[in-house]
Length: 160
Image (cartoon, rainbow, N blue to C red; front, side, top):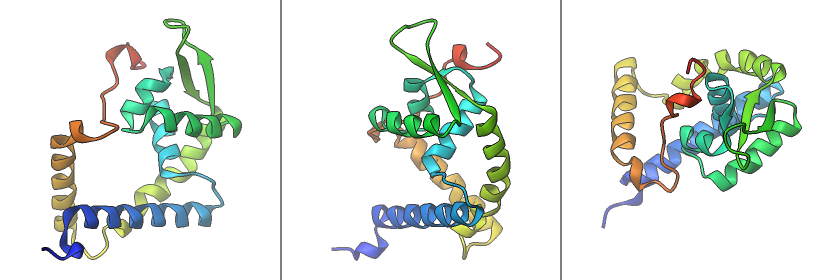
């Protein structure tokens, strides 16, 4: 039997722990209350104003039921607005607020800056190779996920 510390699943879980830890520490240092999932949701809402909650869940590969709680917290903090969809009265559309935009503008440079720290110990070439391989394998395994990544339909794009 293989040692657990050399198994892909274990190493990926550990790397996720490291990534979340670095993210959380940096946001705490900035005095910002923001989780990685909240950040991803805000980025996608900025890219797709009026996106509905179900589509947002697919766009960030997150469970629909759990995303509702994330959206509630962001709305409570005034970072997004939620409205009844004009296309489907059962659906809720989301839009980032000015306060949410200002928050993203403040944290985005910091988040970009610590990406290399998450993969510390790797050269630039190794980091690029790892990222390419991670993208390749997550794309190949997407449908095995309980929350697969889904592209945003054309009618959810701001230009459409």
